[in-house]
Image 1 (cartoon, rainbow, N blue to C red):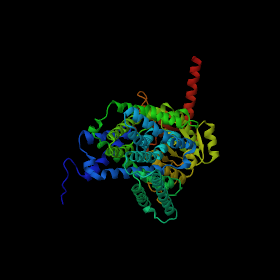
Image 2: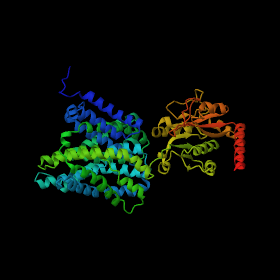
Image 3: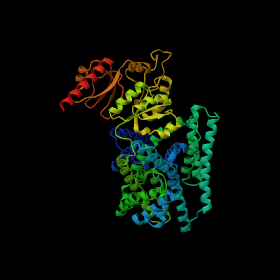
Image 4: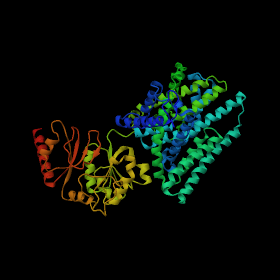
Length: 617
């Protein structure tokens, strides 16, 4: 049966497909071009929405638009809560506590002042909107942190603040709106009624999380149903809490995520990774819908005071809130500055601000009509500003991963030590990790940074700055452990960046493992024992940089006995070619294995040249 579409609409199914394509496509393009994904999603949404009129979310989805965005934000916040493990806070705990307990109310006050004196809003609208502005945008922070690769503590502070303060901001707006309702003479519950409803939301979240944990831990839910049950529990908790007090569902799902994150469930990682994938899709979709819903006519109501308001928020309110909140903590100055000048706002701010702006206008408060446009301007400016400045600002302060992608070597053998020395000579950051203290004596003597302990342990998560390293190479004498390490770290580093030495007897069918397990094999086809044997026989590792004058062909003619073990691209990324290739562009560094006789001959030749130069001088 044919369905007649409203004028100017494309239909719900094409609209959903367009939103998914634009969202995921923007993220992929941002990855390829090394640009902020949030900015590209914002631009894509504006282009297909108000600029060309190809997508009109309000017309396509109608009354379902707001609930759909609400559910998406709830799942995003729940996934954020799943990342908030108290054991991983470490020395950021005091800072997070201050940013929540002191920063939230102080941010409310400073935002309200910026709205009143900057944007020119009345005190009623300023109080309500100021509460919403406590939110720093978990939908924005996650992609920015992924792009900037910040160090652990500042990343944890920004992440925890964004996720925990998100429902607090929504509740602050609700509280302020209740006060405005009371002053306007409209019916509104008292303070105790409001507190009871907020407490109910917290209880719903805790009960939902506790129930899921008990069911999972006692084996009452089969493995294949755990994710569906989790999704259903999130939606039920959100709906139940939101039916009692609007926007309190955000508090419920955040508490639920916190409870599950700190329950130490065996299946926690699988659940979290699936939720991460869902969140990437939801963040993409929500931002496309947000940008496509922009109304240029509404923005036309704003004056120059909107610019003053944004400047006050970015340059005064946010920095002052953070710097005052962190007084007396052990957070270093550079980390305080980074957090103080990083406060992007996201979709939660726009969605909640639009709702309360409309309700304020219905109460006869004219300033309510400006709340929605001001929220969008603040989100757009902060997203673009922090999207382009966070990474260089963090690098300037020494709080982000360097330009050279590092290498994490697992296993402290003679070969891995020699390999690490060559990487260090090539100015590639390198770390050797090994749970056996004796295996680290040789690399420490060679001046190679080391980590004593299991790289998969919780202690390693807290002590090793994984953001420094782009590539993982497992080369211990235990093939099963190498496979375990690369399988576990592949989702975080990417399967194209995890490698392991060839397994013994891997060509035999009864010893071969599935391709989904382990990392890519080191291209020489040699096992750990074979590589160690080479070192025992006197083989050495060296590095050669290809230039215009000394390209690959000339290098190969000069060094026919050398075996190419690995390559470092011009961007500094390590890889192990499965076979020797002649497509090595200028700037590539070849890491090669030299037989003992050739290595001794080259060493003698180098020593002779040094003596001649010394004699000439």
